[in-house]
Length: 321
Image (cartoon, rainbow, N blue to C red; front, side):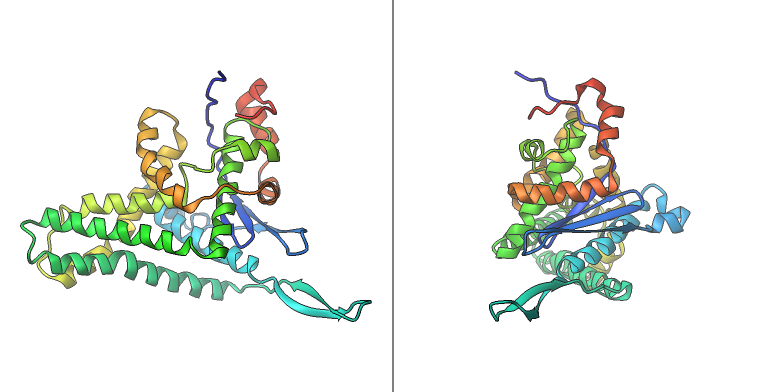
């Protein structure tokens, strides 16, 4: 029986987009999509994070908030890029039919900012304000504030899981979840010391400890604990306190996710389990051609061969796990 390979933190991360993958490593990102004609289109560029502009944005417990905003900015930018290949009529072909082609349309930074802002407002209303309002009404009949806070957390997690399950029924989202799986598989492949080939990627796990799904669940679980110790007298103060504490909870959650993602032991295994289980809803087993797209995105921003030499030495092989 082959011994379990160690996992080494690579620093790369990514996101599934429409028919493709975005990968980021330090100050560079690349997005790759599979076009309808079967070809792979790749775009890459430098990325200036908030932490690069403002030194305090890299402070512990503060950096998580800025990292979240950065992820949303870049995620929306590349997601809209992947969706911008609209079908248009081209010149007549030899058989008299119109040729269909894809044309990339650039996305302005202001448009991305507005989209991120609206997304945040909707998320706050759905996952923070609504559970706090419902639990605030129920608090009038519940015997204690701890039960009220627990009910609020249950409602929040329930809404989130219901939302994930609901959108997973959409055809396009199912494919996004498959690309999400290929993103995780690529990162797991190199972080476990395997060459980045389609066979090795397909054999790797589709769950990863540093996933955004895990981050969101961590936010919700930590919020339950924090709100058990915060007592307010009215529903409106309850809602305001939840909104004001979002940056604090996000900062703590980021540090927890960062810790579990950078360490591979029994303690971090236990901490990461709930998020990994929830990823069963947000990831699907990808097809081989999806892994090919993900590999191209990785190779544009990450020298995985040098990474394997530096961290695994002669432990690098082409065999599957």
